Length: 133
Image 1: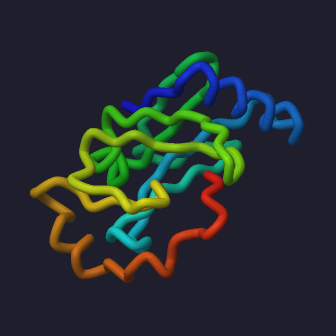
Image 2: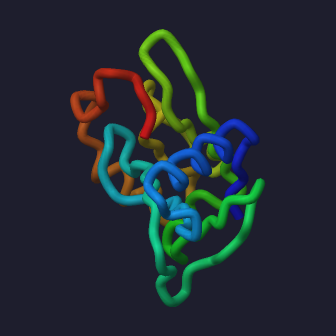
């Protein structure tokens, strides 16, 4: 469903340990908004919701809701450090285009592409720091 690089898994495990939530799961999701129509999100959760897809990747439990799954199936989560700071980055094979900040995307033709086009709000909604999630 969603892959994690070794670096991303290490960072997530560190977050889980720091927060004392070693049994928590990483939720990767998509919501409307952002400068390209849809935006990525990630959260740490103790419980999955009905219908979630469950997997374990590089020792991290990952959950994705059914709606998000159709937009991010096959995506890879990485952790990158750059001059603007560090953060998580998602490489999504289902994206026709992505915003310069890498936090939002427009899906390839198909379900959701029109919805994304209608939700596009311009790059003013991008975080200015360049840091990831």
